Image (tube, rainbow, N blue to C red):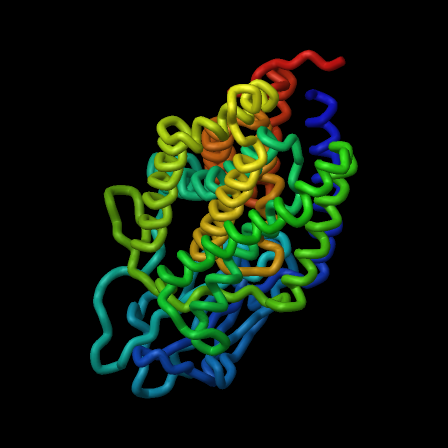
Length: 435
């Protein structure tokens, strides 16, 4: 088991390097879409990007309201909308929010920022939407409370996507490297249904439900058409692992061709005013993401504990041969696990895309953290994946209170290494004899 984990981490790290290089080649940028109160694009508006008081880049919104400004490196930037270039009939909803300060851009990230625009005759009062209160210091209680909430949200999304990855390994012993693409497929399916310019323009909620069904269908089809025939032929675990890497590369670049390299947000729930609760500021969108993620985790846990199919999944994961001897149809359980894993991955992709932005490699960027959650909690344990995802998300977000944001994933993986040194089977995993 220990050798399998080491091999997994080495392969993931090696394959993430080209992805990081590709992202660096695309470069970091900040951008967005300007729309008026009637939803129509606002063209000809100038946006400046500054760092330490020095202008770094400028951009002008096009006929579709879109603008993009490339920045030279990751870091924190001030983004300012020149209100003098707005049409006379329009103004910012918050006059003091023309400058978004300390906008963090991670390596390879195409960061989207928002400037809510209203009619000049009726500007809305209040603070800047989506912006928390000014922090009093890197380690202050307000900052830690805000980062803890962000960590719970991020960790719950990781946990939702990692459950299927863990269950698939538990039932079939397959390390599915293409699981990240199931996340991307869910996010993109919802985007194409939600985007009025290229799709039917559905609301995001029905779009997400259809995307979850598509993710479950894709997972079931992969099991029936690819993985089950390979297992019947006696294909070894290492060969299956390599095939999953090839499938991941194939699907990822097909998604790149279909979606394009430019990240794009959903149409709904983009511009919202933050709700301030004590030291914490959170938009209704992020609050719904957090609560819904926790509800889904609880529901999946109850399904595994209380339902017949959930007990069968746990039985096959614990001991496949004993489960089959007890009358459990393991092949059918495998199909249900793949469908459940695909549906949860798609849901996680929709929530991740809503939290940040939809991009062609979003699932692959989340894959290393999914593996960290699964290994931390214990390979094959759905409950371990839940706990591991929450821990990884909290560590990643809380570390930014003292260290650069570029290192947030490094601390989570550092914790993973420490756990593997002390307990190689993970927190909820069982020690196994090899040989």
